[in-house]
Image (cartoon, rainbow, N blue to C red; front, side):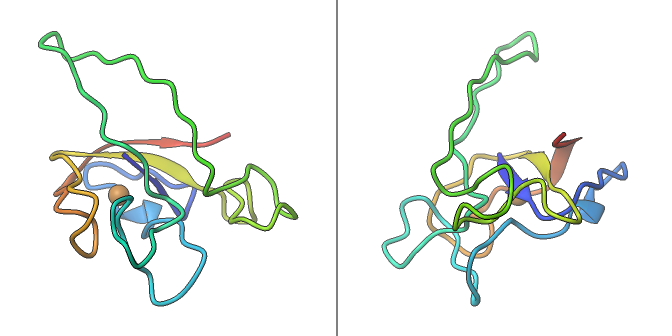
Length: 108
Ligand SMILES: [Cu+2]
């Protein structure tokens, strides 16, 4: 899962969500990348055989609103939560090998 830059989830590929939320350029992806990480990086979620998952999210890399010194999820163009098809390896570029976007939700 990652936080993506825009509050747009147009199916089926969810590319309207844009790239990952990031605080600097060039963007460096990966929670375990020694060089840095995207502000939108999140841990992997494990889905049960019935296709459901219960997840509690916490990220010290973003804020909800501007003025906190971190990228704001509720900025002018909003943001979204995107789930990818494969696990994020937390290191490789640009998205940790996470593959296609399979689900997307606008953050409100
Ligand atoms: Cu992503």
